[in-house]
Image 1: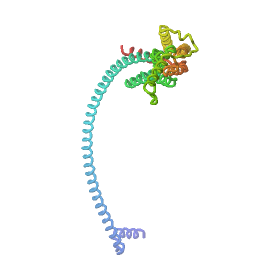
Image 2: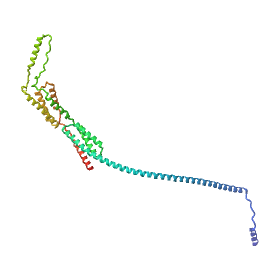
Image 3: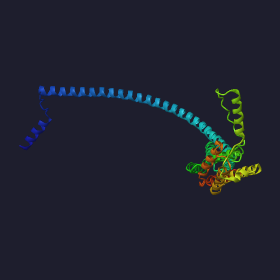
Image 4: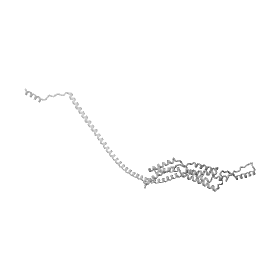
Length: 347
């Protein structure tokens, strides 16, 4: 039983199995899938080829751009080298120009320093003269003019080391402008005019020595004899004059005494002029008052020239002289200090 089963199994294994037929839909799906796969593969192949072509074009374009960039970079490098060379040349020229400029500045500084030294010496003399004139003559306007001219001269020099000098000058100029003005020249001119006038003023004793004879008026009602007699009588009356004076001693004043009186008055006026220059107000007023007293006592005040001289003396007597005048020591000190500094810097 067992052998029979085993032989049957072995024969069955050696026998060819019967073929089964595939159904039609499955085959169609398999073909569609195969076609789809093939189409997809072809599409992918075409896309890859297109991508490769695009990549190759991009690579070629990039290579071209890189080549152009290299050329441009090379050109820029050459231009930069040329610019650097030009810049180096310009720097050399600039260094040379700076050296020349420094040399010119040194030369100019040396020349201007010498000019400044000469100008400071001249300015010091001008300030000393202006200070002396200010203290002696009291002429504030002349001192202001001198200081303004000095300031203009310093402005033309335009040197920084002279700033302190200009500041001192400005301070002195403002001080002079605020000082009351005493017209010394005008007062001196009036005194000189009075001195020149003294010899022309008539004394009281001389009044009537040279009388002015008034002409006799003609009378038509008189005949020739009466007219002639009237003229003789008129001339005779002019020969005799009677004068009254409250000072009989003045009648006895001799011509020599009159001469010395006039000279004494002139000396008084000269003393008043000296007192004016020295600002001695007490002496000035005393001399002016004495001169006025002499004119009123010995001279004929009825004469317009004498009356004008007395009025002028009264005006001068009321003139104040006690005006404190500033000095120019600050400007002089600044100029001397600047001059000393310039001499040390320019041996």
